Image (cartoon, rainbow, N blue to C red; front, side, top):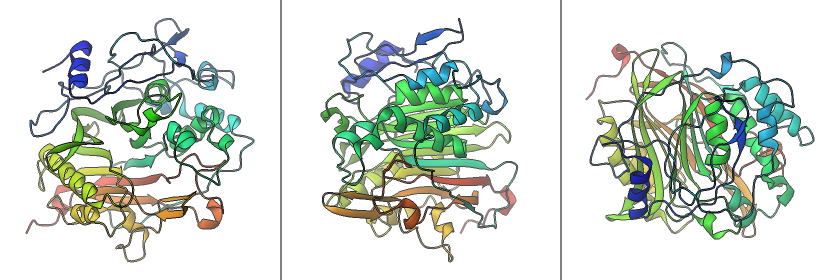
Length: 444
């Protein structure tokens, strides 16, 4: 049943899902007057922008999904003009860093912003970043063997590094603080997204959702959903921008939303601090459905059993949302904080949902994960691990292309993040296609 903003926020607070946020405001062009408007007044509480669920087995805050309206293809909109355009000026503003007054308890609904041109915005990002080193040159690998139908679905998975953690808690000893300045780092993040222009975008450690990612990506034609961690470590950092969480975006011209759930993962029947967003989308071109999920499991060594339990809970939710092995195809993106040898990885690779890891297709035998998806240097030493994955239903989806990784030489001796890369995690990008029903392997 639909819940209005006030009721929905009250429900969230009762569940201790949304803690106090400080949200900076951002000015963008609005449809009604063409002038500048503060899209999101500072608010004490924020809730997920779009949440709904039909299956009662999924732990979520729920409402009935409505088809996305006002579909805009960012590739076919009028240009915003030169470097003095309104969106450029809006992004260039210094984000408020002081305490914010308390106002309305909750807001729902899409931001009221004008469409913007993706090519022009990317040029503006490049202009801001002109004094930074060139970004990595990464090429796609085409593994072959996918009998695709129509235009592939591009999926991007990325832990973008929460701003509060990058500056306040993560201790990247080889990364200068000026490289992490949000006034420029946000352009590096946007440039990376605009370089690959995914149809589905799954992000972790998002702590600038309402003032940056939601309005900017909506203006580019995306629908967004955000689910914060209940006890985000960002809130322990002075002058933070609220909790970090998972965000899922999809192109409104490519998909319509059927169902959505924001899930607080459980372990041993207890709710944990990790979350996931699970959505069922319908492809507008083919009418076929796709279940997409984004998550971020517990970090650090010594927590392997908790990650395994969280993964099991996520698999149960995915089973319910997708209908199981013969149901809706799945795409599961996330920072699992687990190497391929961990139990949670084995649970996903051996589950009854017939999931496979897309990035194994980079290897010569198609069976080996990459050597790293994150590479950083902290006071404890160098950390090079494979923690990020894109899982997919290999019986219903084919992998058409996989974005390769930069070499150690390209990354450089100081590793990540850096002046030319905004996160300690590398982005994962894959092109998928629906397999024709007649080509699906016979079920045993």
